[in-house]
Amino acid sequence: MNIHLFSSCPRALWIFHSLTWPGKEAYARKWGHQAAFYVHPENMAQTWDRLRVWQEALAAMPEGDWLWHLGPGCFIATPDVDIRSLGPFSGDMVVGGDGGGFGLDSFLLRNTPETRLFLERAAKLRSLLGSEEEALVILLTAELIRLEVRPRRQFASLYDPTSPAPPETAYQPGDLVAQIPGWHASHLLLLQKLTAPARKAAPPQQGPEHCTYCVQALGDNMAHVHFLRKLAQRHPERRFVHQAQAHYLPQLQEMAEDLPNLSLEPMRRVEAGAVDGWKNTERHWETHPLRDQYAAFFIDFFRHLAGRMGLESPIEKPEDLLFDYPALQKPTPLDAPFDFLVVNSTPLSGQLSDASGMDALIAELAARYKVVVTQPTPVPGVVCTQDHGLSVSGIGRLSTLCKHIVMISTGSSWGTFNVWNIDSIAFRVILIDREQIGLSKNTVQAATISAARLLLQEKGLL
Image (cartoon, rainbow, N blue to C red):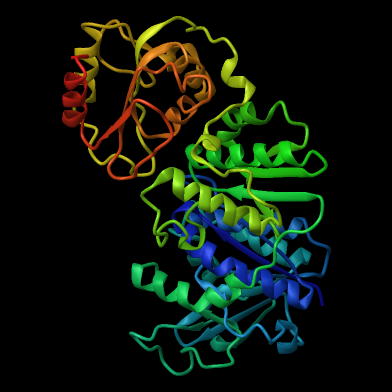
C-alpha cells in the first residue's frame, strides 16, 4: 500500500502550515511515504481550489496509490504509528466521521477512475453551492463514491484543552493525528508548542541540489534569492532551486540570470525536503529578539537557514546584504539624473500603517526638484517608473542616478539597497513603523509622512 501524504494551504494560513509541515514530512520519511504540498494561488479561496489540487495530486500518482490529505491545522500526534497499520481499507475514500458529519481535514483517497470522477462531479457544483466542503458532503451522503467511514479519532481527533470536544472526537494519547479547532492566536501558540519536537528534529539537506521556497511577498523573495546567489557563487558545484509565486518570477529572474547553478520556478507543488525561506516560518521572526533590527536579524536568520541546508552562511555582516546582481546596472528608459526618487508603492506586509499625505509631500518636492515616483500620483509633471515599464531592478538602477531617496519600505524599494549607490545617495528617508533597516549610509527613518517632512526640512531640502 503506497501512501502519498499531501497538504495544501493558502498564504493567509501559512504560519500554521509552517508549524505542522515539518512533522508531516518527518513522518513520511520515517515510514517511507511520499510527501508534498500545494500552494493555493494568491486571492484564491482555499475551499474550491482544494478540489483542483487533489485532482492534480492524483494525476501525478500511480494508479491504485493512496492520497492522504492533511489540512494545515492537522499535526502528527503519534509518529510511531504507521497509518497503514489502521488498514486494510475498503472503498475508494476513507474518512473519519461521527454524529456531527465527516472530518474532511484528514482522509484517504485511492487513485481510481471512480475517485477521479467523484472529484469532477464535486467541481461541477461550484456554481450551485457555497463551498467545496458542502459539495463533498452532498456527494458522500448520496454515496457517489465507495466510502468507508471510520471513527473520527482514527483520522483527526480534536485537540482543544480550553473547550473539550465530545469523548468520541476529543484527542486522547495514542491518536495518530490531532487537529486544532480554529485559526486564532491561542491556537497558533498551542500548535507551536505541540509541534516543537518534530521541528527541532528536522535533518539538514543533503546532496548536490538545494531546494527552497517562499510563498510570501516580493521583498521576502528578493532577500532570499540574494542569499541563494551568495551560496551559488560560493558553491559552483552545487545547484540551487527556488520556488516563488509565479507573478513574482519575472522580477526575480533578473536576480539569477547570470548564475547557471541558480534557477527559479513557479511555486505550486513542493516536494518533501525543500526548505522554507520565509523569515517567519515556524514563527521564527515573531519570537526572535532581533526582529526589529533588519540587518542583524537576517544575518542570524541566514545562518539558521544555511544550517538547514547543510551549509555555512555567506552573509556575515550588514554590507553582505546589499544587492550586487548585474541587472542593477542595465540601462533603463529613464536613465537620467533625478533629484529625488520617491518609492510610494503600497506596502503589502504592514510595514507602514499610515501613508496618508504622501501625494502632498511629493507635490512639495516636485515644486523644487526633479522627482520620479514608483506608483502613479495625481501630482502633475511627475515621472512614474510604472509608465516606463521599470522592474524592481530598474528602480534599483535608477537609484544609482538619484541624489536623494524618500521610500516606503516595500518590495519596490529593495533594489535601492545596492553596492553601486552606497556612497552616492546624499540623503535617504525610510518610511517604516518600527523595524530598523541599518543597510545604508546617510539614512534616517520616520513612521509618518509628517515626520519625514520634518527630517527633510532639518536637512534643508524643504
